[in-house]
Length: 224
Image 1 (cartoon, rainbow, N blue to C red):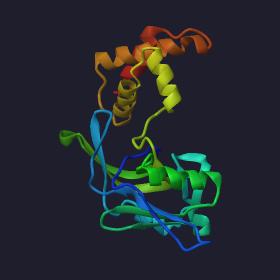
Image 2 (image 1 turned 90 degrees about the horizontal axis):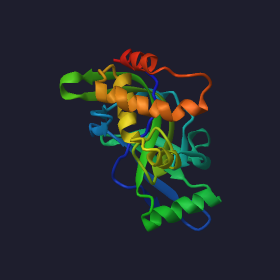
Image 3 (image 1 turned 45 degrees about the vertical axis):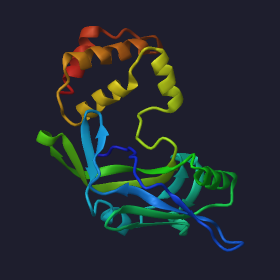
């Protein structure tokens, strides 16, 4: 399974001052182990050792501000970002680039405007305990980036897109939950299907041809 998503974690990132002429450093935990996060009607957590394989492969990981690839703070490839697993989780240390993005990141963290971290990744193996509605990610396939963030929890759309959907009367949190449940092989009930259909109707004008309700409902049922 390869899903890219982000998790909120604590504690907040910290800035370590350096001597004059040396870059400031941001350090924090991009993930913590055995801390369940609520996602789409179930819980998900990271197992200790989940990052061991990815780290041993020296994957080329970026440190970004708010997961924005245009706001690069550091990179493992050139040793300006270092990553390690300890008993608590995945720790990152980035020597912040002396760029507008880097200076912005330092100031936002100092002020407390950005006070959380997260990471983007794909899954290699996971364990699903349906009785507890708990998914444990046992091994990471690819680690894409670590990031100090304003909005730490993964969202399927940008803030601006979420606002537009809300104005259209679409409950994006509920729809994200439907997608999450379908991806996990959990059944969809009639309320889920009705909500998904409302979302589909909002897209009809932008798509060629006509989407039939019955066909859409059957397709959604096949997710279960």
